[in-house]
Image (tube, rainbow, N blue to C red; front, side):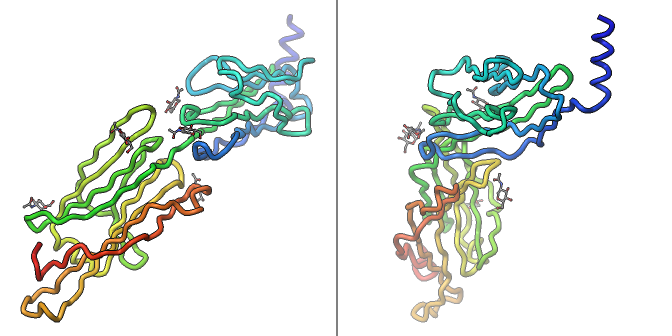
Length: 293
Ligand SMILES: *[C@@H]1O[C@H](CO)[C@@H](O)[C@H](O)[C@H]1NC(C)=O
Ligand SMILES: *[C@@H]1O[C@H](CO)[C@@H](O)[C@H](O)[C@H]1NC(C)=O
Ligand SMILES: *[C@@H]1O[C@H](CO)[C@@H](O)[C@H](O)[C@H]1NC(C)=O
Ligand SMILES: *[C@@H]1O[C@H](CO)[C@@H](O)[C@H](O)[C@H]1NC(C)=O
Ligand SMILES: *[C@@H]1O[C@H](CO)[C@@H](O)[C@H](O)[C@H]1NC(C)=O
C-alpha cells in the first residue's frame, strides 16, 4: 500500500504523465440538413507513459452520464455509446491511425437542431485528467427574411423585418449603410420572438421620422440576421435615394424618393454559412416632398 502511494507520488510530480489538451475552441456551426455527419475532436496529446489506465469520455451538456466511453488501455478497442438513440454516433469511425488516438473523436450522424449543445470530452489516466468543450450549433436559416418600409400618415416611416422560422434564436439588427460604412440604427425597436416546434419566428419594427433618414442622403437600410457566436448571417437591404426633382422646385426641400430593392434568394455562399441576398426587383414606392404621402 505504501509502495503504491510512493509510486503514485513519484509519477505525479515527475511531469511525464501530464496529458496535454488544446484550449477550448470556437463553436462548430453546421447548417441543418446539409451534412451527413459532424466530427467533434478531442485534441489531446500523450507522453510515453500516459496510456496507464487511460479512459476517454464524451458528455453532452450538463449530464453526468457519458454518451461515449473509450477505454484506451484495454483489450476491447470499441467505444461504447449510451443514452442516445441507435444510429446517432458512428462508433466505427477512426479518427487517427495511431491507436492512442483512434477513437477520440465523436462522429455524430445526421445532426439536427436538437443535437446542439456543449460536448465535453474528459481524458483521464491514473494521474491526470483534462477536459475539452466543443460547442455545436446546428442552425436553421429562415425560409423567409422579409424587410419592408412604409410611410405612416403622420410623416413617419415604419421599418419592419421578420425572419421565420430559424434556429437558434437569431439576432435581428437594422443598419444604415452609406457607401461601405454601416452603422446600427440607433432607435429602439419593438422586438417579438415566438418559439414553436423547436424553431423561432422573430421580428422587429421601428417607427422613425423621415428626416432622420434624409440626413444620410444616398443610403441603404439593412436588416441583418445573425446567429450569436458564429459568423453565420444573412441580410436584406432597401435603398433610399434622396433626389432633387426639377418639377417640384416650388418646394424648398429636396424630395426623398425611396427605391425599394427586395429579394430572398440565398446565394451559393450559404453552404459556407454566410448568405447573401440577390436583388430581384426595384420599384419606387413613393415620392416624398412633392406628395407628402
Ligand atoms: C432539419 O433537417 C432535416 C433533414 O433535412 C429536416 O427533416 C428537418 O425538417 C429540418 N429541421 C428544421 C427545423 O428545419
Ligand atoms: C443543451 O444545451 C444547449 C445550450 O445550453 C441548449 O440550448 C440545448 O437545449 C440543450 N440540449 C438538450 C437536449 O438538453
Ligand atoms: C412561424 O413561421 C412559420 C413560417 O412562416 C409559420 O408557418 C408559423 O405558423 C409561425 N409560427 C408562429 C408561432 O407564429
Ligand atoms: C414618429 O416617430 C417618432 C420616433 O419614433 C415618435 O416619437 C413619434 O411619436 C412618431 N410620430 C407620430 C405622429 O406617430
Ligand atoms: C469568423 O470569421 C473571422 C474572420 O474570417 C475568423 O477569424 C473567426 O474565427 C470566425 N469566427 C467563427 C466563430 O467562426
